[in-house]
Image (cartoon, rainbow, N blue to C red; front, side, top):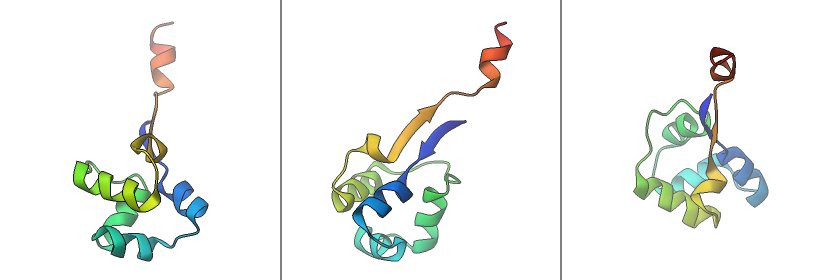
Amino acid sequence: MGIVVDIDVMLARRKMAVGTLAERVGITPANLAVLKNGRAKAVRFTTLAALCEELDCQPGDLLRFEPDDAGEDAGA
C-alpha cells in the first residue's frame, strides 16, 4: 500500500473543513483533495509544515507507512 495520508482524520478531530484548511495553508482545495485522497506523488516540506502548523500536529499524524501484503507471500 505504501504511504497513507490521514489528513481527513485530523480534519475531523479539529472540526475543520477542507476549504478552510486549504485557504489557511495557501493551496487550492483541489490540490488538498489530491493529497488527502492519497493520489499525490509528492508533498513539499513547506506544505507539510504548514499543514502541521494549522492542524497542530506532527507529520506522523498525517502520514503513515503500510507495507504491501504481496511482500509477505513472495518470501514464502
